[in-house]
Structure formats: structure tokens, C-alpha cells
Amino acid sequence: MFTFNANHSSRRQWLGGCASLLAIGAGWPQLVQAQTRELKVLSGFAPNIAFSRDIIRVYLDNVQKASAGQMTSRLNGPEVVPFADQFQPVAAGAFDLLFTHPAYHSGTTAIGLSMDAIAPNPAKRRSSGVFDFVDKHYNKLGLKVIAITPTGTKGFQFVTKQPIKGPQGLQGMKIRATVSYHPMIKALGGTPVVMGAGEVYSALEKGVIDAAAWGLTGVADFKWNEVAKYLARPVFGQASLFALMNLRAWNALTPAQQKLLTDEAIKLESSVVKRFDELAAEELTELKRRGMQETQFASVDADRLEALWAQGVWEVARAKNGAAADELRAIAQKADLTK
Image (cartoon, rainbow, N blue to C red):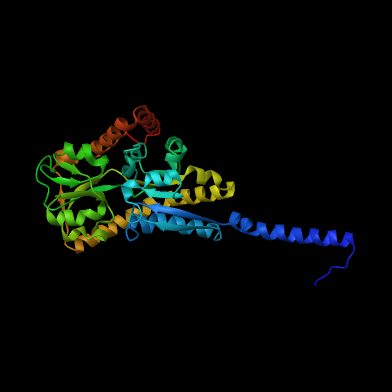
């Protein structure tokens, strides 16, 4: 039998020391946990396309590097949650961060979508109050806007099976498009069809649709050149992708962690426009090498593409968000960022 022969004072000191060691040991996992943070990220885009490779993956890697490995990430794509159903799980806290195009949740709010009608000048968007207005709007929905990244100086194009012919060049065509394109497509004689990017190849191949509205990168990744031979010109508008964080998760971060995420977001925004202009030029060259050709809108349509685009985006935003859309537009107009 083990016996302890020290006096009562020594025994109390020994027991106190043991208690202190146990307390430190129990607290150690919490100390380590407080120093590290894994972000659960949900993306609306497959990992092999440019939006994923050159925006969200770059951002997450830079955050991990800037934090010396204390902020890591686990990236999930639309195979986990379909792109159109991702907003609510992130707002509810099932994921920490959402990378998406705001057209994908325009049924909830179209304020984010309005950024596609606002010039792709990240610094001016922030200094003018545009970014802050959008952020406060999303805060009411349980989300924090981390980054708004324009995908190049210009954003969009139509990929068609047949060449454009005459005025109202989309006449009679069924065109894959998110809601932001709908007013423009209708004005040009077409019929918009909502579907995910992963469905477009088969739909073009089978004749379910005649064209697809899309950005200036990604056509080669999806291999749409195999089922559609024309790129309609001119290109138009601008596209902005969002990184949104669950607001409770954001508020649980330390000020230093919040600053790190914000600083890396600002760096990302400033670099993405140039990068995607380069990628768009590279992709156009590659698509032409694969046999695609440019087809031109008639001048009567070409001259109004930009106005049709901006007007349509604001129309969608105002129909969904009313006065909030008008207020955002007024802020952007004052800064000469939109019409």
C-alpha cells in the first residue's frame, strides 16, 4: 500500500501543485484551438474552373500563408450543396464561408447582383461607400461581405450554336442564363432558360438550348466549344463574385483574424481584374485554336448592349429590393460607377 509521510502542509502544497498541473493540462486544447481556425468553405463552382483556381483558392492559400498556418480551410463545391441552394446553409452556420455569384441567391436578395452594373474598380467601390452599403445589407441576412471580386474589365458573352443574324440577334434562341441576363435577352428577342453550368454541355448538344450566357473564362474548361461554335461580340457588362462569411463566425474571430481576412481580401480584389483580363485573352486564343469563331451583333444591338445590361440588372434589383436598390444606385452614380 502506498503511503504519503509528509506533513499536512507539504501534502497541501503537493495536492495544490497537482491541481494546477491538471488545470493547465485541461486548458491546453482550448489554448491551441484559440490559436488555430479551420474555415469550412462552400463554393458555387467546380474546382477545375478559373473562378475556383484563380480567386477562392488563391485567397484561401494567401490567408493560410499570412496567418503562418493558423487559419486553414476545407473547400467544398456544388457537389456537396447545389449552387442555387448554398446561401441558407452558410447563413445558418453549417459553413463558414460562401464563394458564389449573387445571381445564385437573387431569390433572397438582388443587392449583391447590383454589383454587376457597377464599374469594376475595387478601390473606388470601397472608398465610395458602395462596399459598406452592400455589407450592411448582407449583415441583416446573417452574412458578412469579405470580398467582391470583379472578373475582369468586361464580364460577359453569349456562346451560340449559330451565328448572329440581323437586328435582335437572339431572336428565337433559347439561352441559358441567370436572372441578371433576362431583361437583356428578352430585349434582343431571345428566351432565357435557367440552368446550372454543369447542364449546359448536354443541353447545347441535344438542342434544349441554342446558346449560353457566360463569363469570358470557363468556356474552354466546360468544353462548350465541342457543341457550340460561335462567340458573340461585342462582350459586355462586368461580373463580380462574392466571398461571404457567416456573421456569427465572423464576430467570433479575434480582431487580428478579422483584419487578416480583410487585408487579404483587398489584395485579392486589386489583383483579380488584371488576372482575369489576361485569362480572357488567353482563353479566346485557345477557343479559336479549337475552331470557334466570332460572330457580331448588328450595330443597332451592339451599340446598346451595355445600356441593356445595366438597365436589366438594376431592374432585377429594384423588383426584388425596391428602395434599397435605388439607394445603392444613387451611391454608385455619385461616385460615377454606374449609369
